[in-house]
Image (cartoon, rainbow, N blue to C red; front, top):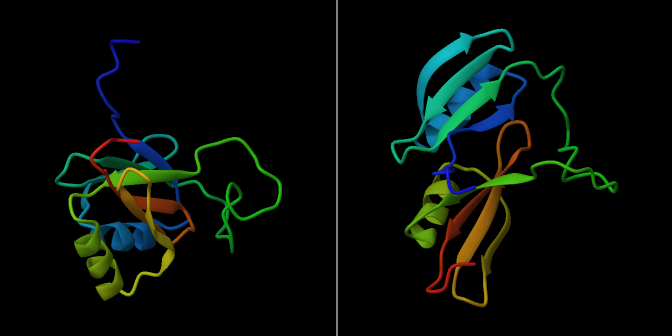
Length: 135
């Protein structure tokens, strides 16, 4: 569809708003509003324009991610990928925050680089720097 112009927001179900807010504030997201609506939802936005809606109806915390950490492979969104302009600087910042890098860094055949972390609810976040030819 040519009418699509971008991604409006990313919805992430979380167990605890305060914990989610604290984690994502470390990444530079700013709290905007919430909880609001029937779900309810809270909204944070990064200065880059990336908007996250926290869905505040998770029944419980978990030791794993149902889409990533079990042998059965269920359909669904497995991670978000955030573009960065300096992967080494992003990695150094994550390490300084004492956030564990769970995979990577990985270098792609086109020179792109990425690494992965998990948030407080084990949701996967990729930091991705494009190579000369986008993959």
